[in-house]
Image (cartoon, rainbow, N blue to C red; front, side, top):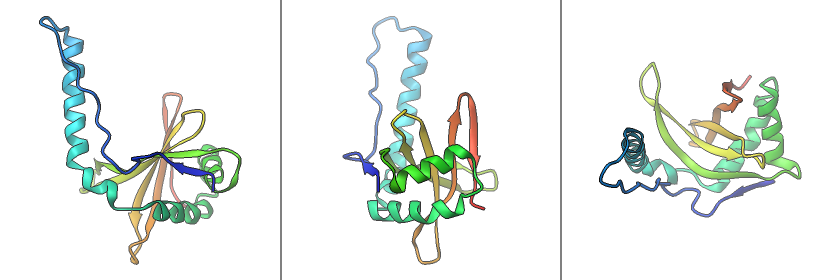
Length: 151
């Protein structure tokens, strides 16, 4: 496979909180508050980062390739690159970021980054056996979010 995992890929990634001077701008205050809130969300969801191993992710990717055969071309290329090409795809963060779902609950994803720095979010679930499975893939194409689901 041409997939690599960055050191600490399954550890909490916290932003650096800036120290504000005596007269910060509204933008600086807003940015600091955003980083603090985002860091807290990441700390709250840190347990999810260690749920799955490199092997679990690799197996899920291999199974997903056949299930996304009619999906967006960007998704097909990324999945193909992950399991057998000269392009290296980097997994730089494990399962993280619980996101509210309109019907209740949340969903997790891990990040896969191509050499051109395009980041794909691979949303995960579990099969009855407990094995990791890819249930949705998304990425930004320009300013448009592209989503793909298994067929």
